[in-house]
Length: 128
Image (cartoon, rainbow, N blue to C red; front, side, top):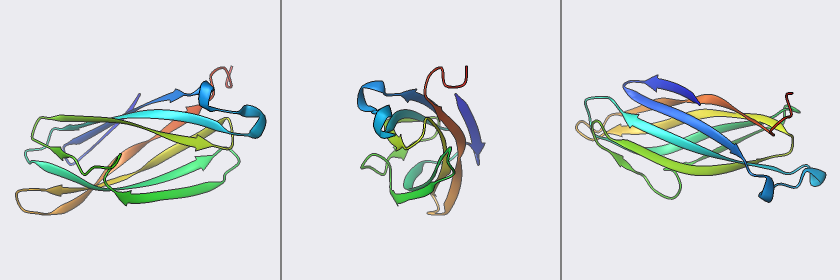
């Protein structure tokens, strides 16, 4: 698990290879990731947008940007935790993701970015 804290918002990521959804013979590798966001700031927050950078080990790159996460713009109160699971497909057995969330402080409506830590996605036993 990797963790990053920005402005009192802690973001942690765990990854899981999905062999039943992958097809290595077709260069299709699927990973799930679980994000845990802990609001350690003194403000109530809303997650407004996400911006992901996805990099395969052959250095092909793509970006994904949009509103919220998994179809919602969650409210995360002071001291609360929000978790979600999503997924990513790669064309190689190893890749990485990193990015940002755009958050809104609900008290003063100020927007700020929270860093999503860089995390690796690796097919099990690939690095042995």
